[in-house]
Image (cartoon, rainbow, N blue to C red; front, side, top):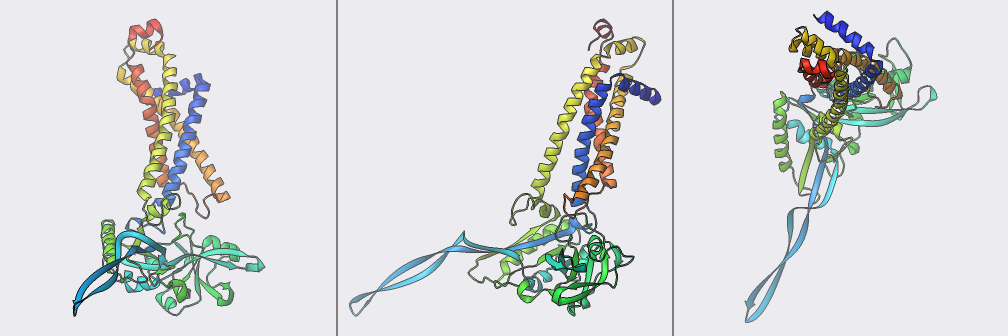
Length: 446
């Protein structure tokens, strides 16, 4: 039966080449856009190394100190001394709770992490690091700008980088401020050129001298600054003044907290609120706020919101809303095309019904025909998507992030193709299967 359906579908597609071309173009272009968007979201927000534990990670990228408005309150007190009235004046300052007069924001200090955040009870692990520190190096006399992370030992336990060679530096290396460095694969290629192995080679960092390569990690496909660095060195190489600013709580550090289970993330947030209220008020600050974000919030921060807001959920709603709208428009167009095509075949349906064809058989046949053309469009869309991804990666449109057409994206693409075919073909197929025999034979119309 399916073999006959397939033969009929191919003949119908060949019969009207213009309709077939329009349908294939619309389907393939729409699916290409949807698959490209799926690939971007999968690369950025999927559970991929080094963010395989993203559902358990809470980032603390910034910290704010707020000072409330103050007003002077003058109180008068009169007393009589030896028959003489005296007036005592007392001037006090009243803090207007919640009315912000000053605000200072920055990354967190290393001292705040060491004294408070590292002692939190809810997280399974915590890590402190400096993200995206710029560095100019000069291999073969040519300037090369790299961006690096200065990390602690727990960093490599929270983020599961894939090592091509070597491994992470140890806690001892951090304590001893060892001249060791881990390079991203593409950065090692740019600095040393193509080598059979990079382990043991040395990268010269200005006056700090040569750093020995102890590990090579594969390039991360995400744009998350916490993990997309070109190189990694011990955090002990950062100076005290760089890690801690004058305000003591403000500095240049980012903290990552790893929950035992995804359900524990909310408990970590509650503990952060308790920790905020326990901080000693200094430098005319009346309230401190630790701004936490998850992986989706960090990604959304590039496009909307501020450091004080969490827009990951809203961002995803907007993206999926736009994609749904983008999917509905071509579906409606294909429905119209299918209805027009059905008008041309109503006489054929009338004859088939007159010879005993069942309504269910006709419905399945026309759905099958629509799925055939949809899957042909899907194949073309997949090919176009792969070509476009390669072009975007080559042009570095997404910076160092690399789009990949992996199995999750392939599964999503097949699912979208199937849904696309069902939605755009069901209504026309149902209408044609319900065509009365006499009416179809008489008018040749639905």
